[in-house]
Image (cartoon, rainbow, N blue to C red; front, side, top):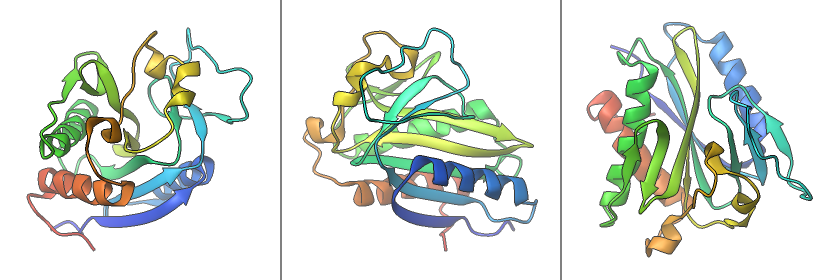
Length: 209
């Protein structure tokens, strides 16, 4: 029986410190290490994944840009956006990167469905969309069958910083958030709901510490 998945509520954090903590956790873990899910919000930051070709870099902004080791292109994180980092042993859960991405997308889709919002995933464009506007973005890093990074879900945030980039590399891609879909929620509540949905898929209802 694997150890229970640990849930960490980190509050508002800086991206770089959290990223480095994920790297350290992943580098030091073993087959006996409990998986962890980290719920956080980040101070304003643009992050650029490993796919750096044909990326529009924002100019004339005080928002920092961080080059990361996750998959994907450029995105924005800021207060009012739910960040869920998944630090998982893929072998333990019999997952690969594709099935994990699908599981994360389905978790967001199920979360939104609880509020009567129809959302969908798109082939070859990871994330979750409502009426062609992106509401959740995904980016992962796999190392020795251990994953880190995760997903972001827009809840109640300033969306203007997205206007200076092509989110996830797609020119003209619109973004949306739960607030604009008449969903009354906040990051902590939405995070707890999303984690519950994801845990049900990962562990068939296994409770967390």
